Length: 86
Image (tube, rainbow, N blue to C red):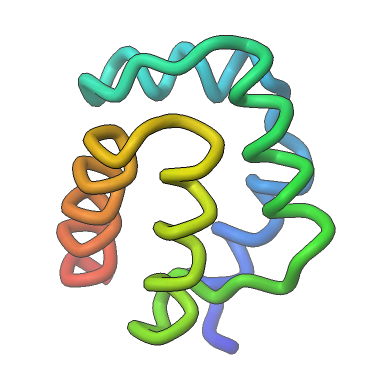
């Protein structure tokens, strides 16, 4: 795992639901605090590597269950932009 991936994992471990909601709004992916808590629980209890296409697909499917298919699709597009910039 490279440094960039380690930073992402560390941020997932330390971010609060309120911070996640603020970030989501900044990127046009509005979620509730309740949804943010569920997303963070999922991220913290599963070792998900968003840099791996297969694992990211699983993550997006789970995200769609928590939020909506539209939010999950937008999040996947954001992940793809993010991964390509690394």
